Image 1 (cartoon, one colour):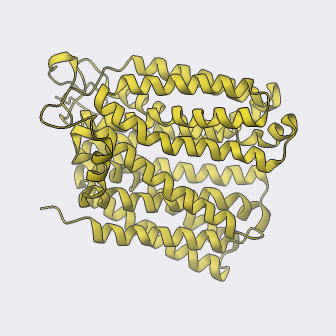
Image 2 (tube, one colour):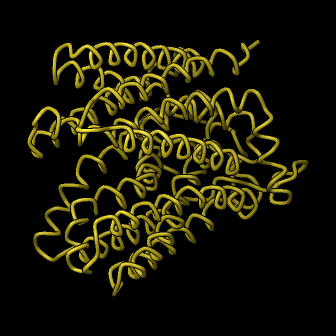
Image 3 (cartoon, rainbow, N blue to C red):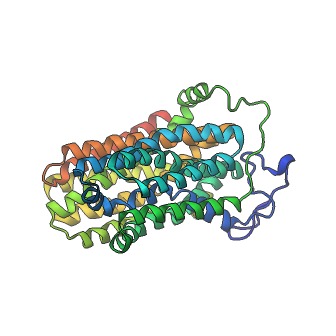
Length: 419
């Protein structure tokens, strides 16, 4: 049984050396701290593969002799692969165990990274980025399922918050590292670095034992579409997954809109923008620390409810301050700081709640919840890009506020009260 947050988590071994789903413990001899670090590392693939190469977009266009719009396709193609791939890896993880599909995804990521580094034209780079995205999404999808295998709902939310702390390093350091690599060895060096990261993450995965055992009495692996339909028709699953997706859409609106709002509208330098962006990442990390402790006392439902109320409140404040021009830059930056902080109470708790009712197909549930978040985020980010003119903060604020309020309504309407 669990012996403490920073010690080892043990459980009796079942046949095949695996652990029953949702059993409340890790495989024998598994360090809790190391497990969290490895799972956090596995969730880094998306932020690393996006944020690290963003500084290189102009250099890629200049080197390959193409317009910036064509270079932007490499980002869109990655996101397409990342979103579509999520629906693939979860069911594979339910059928074949967690580690094998995760390792296959990491291997694809490494292979595609080599292809990106060696691409001779923009079309080859775009195609390899699709494969890059498909490979990148395997690890985070499987990591969430592995947490569900080993821990109950509230403890799983706490562990996911700790994973977010590890993952938070990526958006803070990846753009800086990408810029340094770009200056010294060029844009292709960024993809070589991502390839090395994938290899290190793959080696760390090998140190963690399989968490899932074969489940009897539940149909897993066959009827994937039927399983997805079952999840979409389940009110409790959607009650956790949909509000979290709406709130995450607000974060994507923030990511898409703030570079133009801060730099073009408020005249912030790129260096100052990086500082403001990093401060908000710190807010998200601090809230995850708080959630990792309080969720064990108050439970997933209460913490999720508090988080969704906080995001709706800060979204409402933002639309007022941005619409009326109150406070200038700080009238936008301060509400965003608290929104990102409140998001730390929503993401982990919503995901843990969504996976809790389906331990026999936690991979499929993780895939669908992740895909819903990405689809909502892509829509919100796209709307911000289309509607934002001259860096005005109003479109981003309206979309973020609408997303937060939609999350609040969905939470109240879809999630039935627990008995």
